[in-house]
Structures are given as C-alpha cells and as structure tokens.
Image (cartoon, rainbow, N blue to C red; front, side):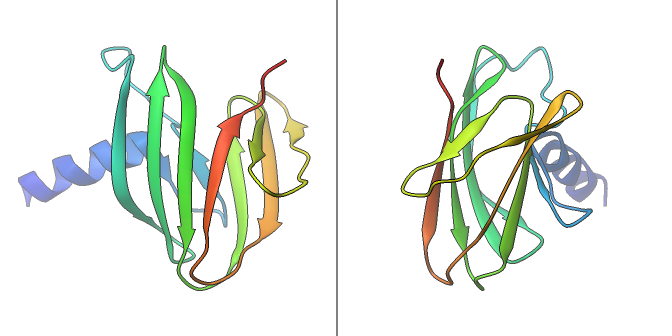
Length: 113
C-alpha cells in the first residue's frame, strides 16, 4: 500500500480533480522547477498531460473521453487553442470552463501579455 500511496500523493501534487474541476499543478514542489507528466486520469473521464517550467504551467493537453463539461483551475490565466474562452479570476486562481466533445483533445497554454 505504501508504494501506491506515494504514487497517488505525487499525482495529487500535479493534478487534482475533485469539486467538479481540474486543478492543474496545485501543489508543485519547489524541488521540481521543470518537468512533465503524461497520462494522468481525472474525474470526468479526462486524460491529462502537463508540462511546466520555472514552476509555471507551460502547456497541457486534456483528452475528453466522455464529452463532459471541463472546469479548469490554474494559478495563471490560460487559453484553450481553437476555442474562444475567457478565464475568470476567483481570488488568486483563474477558472476556465467549456463543454468538451468525446474523443477530442484540447491544448491549454498560458495567456501571454
């Protein structure tokens, strides 16, 4: 059980999917300034790939298996390639939400100013 618990804890630092939203990089350790992870499964039947640098999201790919509504929580504003979606600020977080299509992958990138 200890091995699975450690793996689950690491996955939770990179992606949380409770409260009907996907929180990208919610607890990224200071020791991991850059990296990537592929194939994390999230509630709502989503598969998530993430890459980060300087402790900030560089990009994410989210594959919708079932066509559920996707609500993203991030620490920086993001855009969804190919969709006109405006992030809303909620305290120190940004919330981006949109309907997905089953079998489609959505690329998420930080908004550059």
